Length: 149
Image (cartoon, rainbow, N blue to C red; front, top):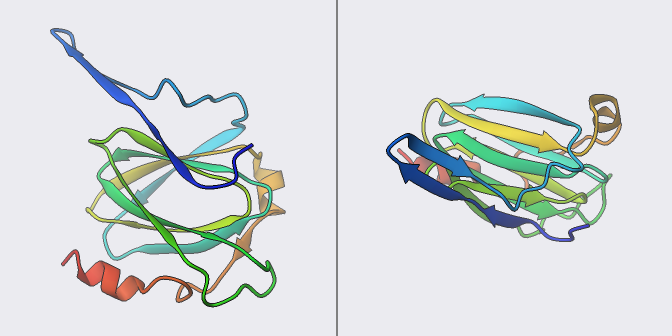
């Protein structure tokens, strides 16, 4: 499928009936489940990686910074891997696609932010494909959070 993380842009239609947000280029064909993350600033969810699982992130409310890292060695990844930063906001109406082979780290830039996450694996498959890494690898979270205060 895809080899690198990327953004799928959505759109907005406004008329007298109200506002309609859409992401028509986001296919749900391979999606098997979804879940919702409720986050506040200063809460870091890092690092979780997947050899087989794709993740799709959509901000329902608020704003998030999501970092992705291509993992070189699953049992002992290099400490100098480069993290790519993505900023997702409810206003921009975008989906971040993170393919298999990556770890991700997430934090909310606003309190009470809500992130919708789609997965191509069911929960049992996902449990067997979960790799957790030290939160202090690849991104200086403390300084990223200080930037928001």
